[in-house]
Image (tube, rainbow, N blue to C red; front, top):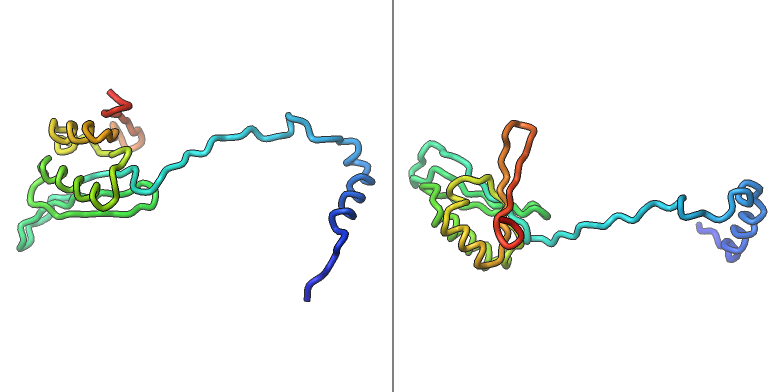
Length: 152
């Protein structure tokens, strides 16, 4: 069962105007307002993190490493198993992601040589993709360096 109160807004205004503490407080000033904060808008499939997992004990297909790509926004994961951690395999994997999801704005890696070689750096710069390198000095201090259109 619902209730119908056609004059609710008029009655609320009348009550507030008759309230003694409301009258003493007066109109809210600018000091009562919270400052506006800009919101960071990130689109899906525009920021990817890459890392290698392995080596694993060689199974029958001789692929000991897994290259993992994770989208930063929706946490979508793409993987490929590889026999070796080479730069060409990373580039081929990148192009597969480009075809399926479009060009990202940023690629984030841990700075291994497979992610920082001349071929991959050239590929990312040619496609106007920022390459952010993350590594840790200890378990609690992350460091970063950016390579690409906005970086070094």
